[in-house]
Image (cartoon, rainbow, N blue to C red; front, side, top):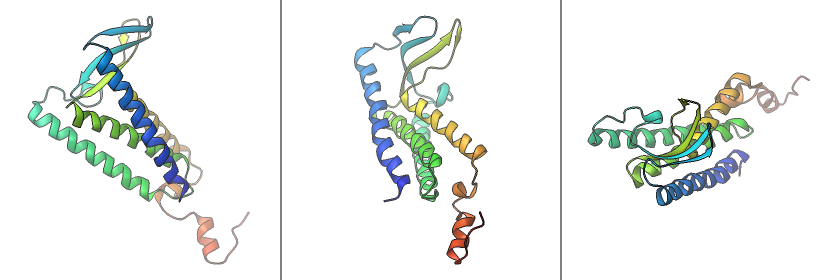
Length: 181
């Protein structure tokens, strides 16, 4: 089995379980909108039900439109990420990790939408009176995956590894030629 699949096989179940486990603990131990201060002036646990997209976007849409829209968008995102993953070259490392992270986060939030009809958010960062929107483990994993994806795109030495095309060395070796040093 190709190495890239091991990233998906090992990361996805672990991260989805961590995401769903943390959300279940929040659902079962915190009351809605309650706050637990962990690092005063910086970090709180706050139980929030996010019916919208990231950062609460479109949460004012009527539920009869919002839930089906977000379910369709989430399922399409999972399918697209899976397709991109399959197109990734076997020797790529950073790209399959990035896509596995994004996939795991998307699956975690998709499960919430099917399970509860909203996404459970509970991590709140702030400095004085400046608050970052409340988020969860899945959002963190998606953000990390996107950061790795951007890094891979901008700083990859071999652009062909992300485009699905064979590397120049592979083409010359296939023709029986030795690549230049």
